[in-house]
Length: 140
Image (cartoon, rainbow, N blue to C red; front, side, top):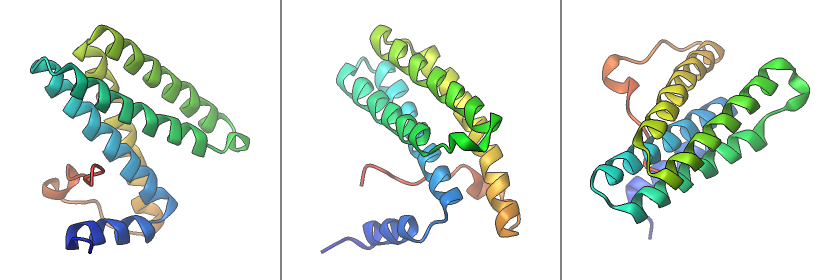
């Protein structure tokens, strides 16, 4: 039997628009990178490694979802995602928290821009400051 929380998350993902799914992916990657930075501070190398890998996998999924026929925006996003992956590989290899922080900053900016696009498409208002930073738990 699924917990009510897991059931809610399942319904949220299954009912999400393509734009909202991208937001969920951004949220997940940011969450995993933050966990990895905390683990680096605590010298918990396996947890840092595993969460960087989860963030990288999300970036690969974002790369695979790009429509390269759409033009320059997709090509630029591909280069940016590729750079982020490279930074995470280096951060994982060297256990450099600052490289992860840089990727979190870049992805947070992308997430905010994407959220604005999704809201305009749906005709919704901007979220309040209280709910803007909330994210979904991808760990389950």
